[in-house]
Length: 541
Image 1 (cartoon, rainbow, N blue to C red):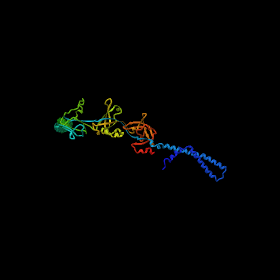
Image 2: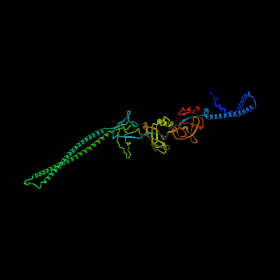
Image 3: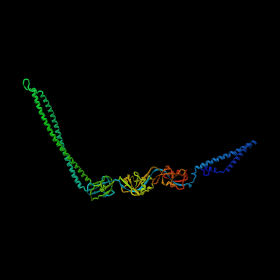
Image 4: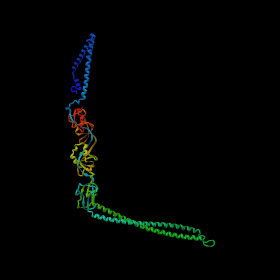
């Protein structure tokens, strides 16, 4: 194994440092050695002036060519050595002469500008419940062996309270009897109407038959009359006897006239029967109408009585939390109606029980007026329970890590002034409402700006020089490049870099004032990717 002193690289460096006088002496020595060798070679030959001239010509050539060749090699080696020295300059700087630095790799991540405030969870929707009748409260729902109270959770369909129902039961019984009687009366009147309608139908059929017979009789009478008129001028025959055909024709006419009178009488009788039947149908129809009305009233009374009976108890229409409770077992409850027009008594004022819908909640926070200028309706809000924020230093986490700890998510729905210094921001919870109990204290963070795919760096990797933001990027040789950057959204711990740094580049954390472009460094740590330290440490170059 070659030592550092005998390595070709160091030998080249030594070559480039020899003085020119030493090189000339070496050249003269070489020429002398060659001349001696030549004389020894010519001792065996005859010496004359021609050989002497040749010897001096050779000596002159060697004196010119050899130094030139040696000089060219020295210059070439010197240039090559200088080039090697330039490429390995950083590698030849001792570790002790480098500035140790900690770095972080720029990465693509979410960055969110958050404005926070504290508040409490309130119901966005209340369901107001009441009895349908006044009375003494006989029953109040039980929870763990005690009476129902504020804050208790109840399930849909659960019976919450009852008042005395004795009178309601009696009223329902009477209403049911009246309803059944009315139904029977209606059925009987409908039967009578049907009978009278049947009689009317029969009378109409008889009238039609009588009219048909009358028409036939009148036709027969007309035929007989015409036949008789043909014999009107000759009542006797040639021998003085009566014409039998005439007599026959006259008898036929008289008979047909009788049939017409009978048919007319039948038609008149049928018309009288129809008139009577129609009067009966009308009377029966009136009875049916009255019976129907009575039945409707009886059914309505029954429904009202049934509703009143049901109204003696209160059932939860939804699963939720008891938000208001005005009744107590054994006390008399006086039913009142809300006075919506005057506003003296609202629905909430007269309700016996109010239930909060746990799936529709809201949070109200107060923010400084300077912050509310950045807050707008529709912006996303991340909601944290106080227990979470107290146990976790959320402000020290990366934006996406902090957001992942949010208990619920909402959006800004209203902004209104609280006073000259603050404004109230109302937030409707859109996700995770059931995870935050009504009345719970929370911290709400409004995302006033966000970029889900930003190039980010920690805030402590940015230095301001001459009031301009800079970062210090370390290349693979360990050299620093000072770069002016354009900043974007400021997150909790991360800063968006709009331009100046690309994802995966190494940037110095907490850069000192003595670090500038070209400063050699020793990377002692790379945040997030420790394996990259070996690849970028100068000692590995």
